Length: 148
Image (spheres, helix red, strand yellow):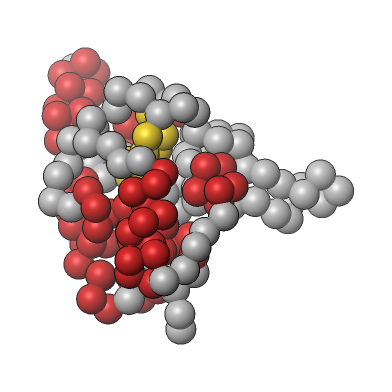
């Protein structure tokens, strides 16, 4: 089954970022589009990159049928400095601490593609993301200190 464009966006972004795990390593919209073109020779829509997959953006539901439309996926976090959402900033992958900024109807949505939906030679990125990127160990340690 061919990859969806949404999964291509996540994979391209992860491929650029890997192996870095910091909050402040960001990639531009153009970097992501260029990587998608380099790998799959396809173009993506601006709305998919800038709205549908950004965790802090509200889900763009069909107004006549709110259960339909938009995406609950939280693949990307858009930020200027790494920690707080900013519509004019660049992108990084979604991290555990970003959940507090989830847009309307995005809380609990998928944060990365299912591994079987990713081209086989990029599946290691899903494992890297889950094992090393998503859970920011410094954030978890600080949270545990604050709650104790």
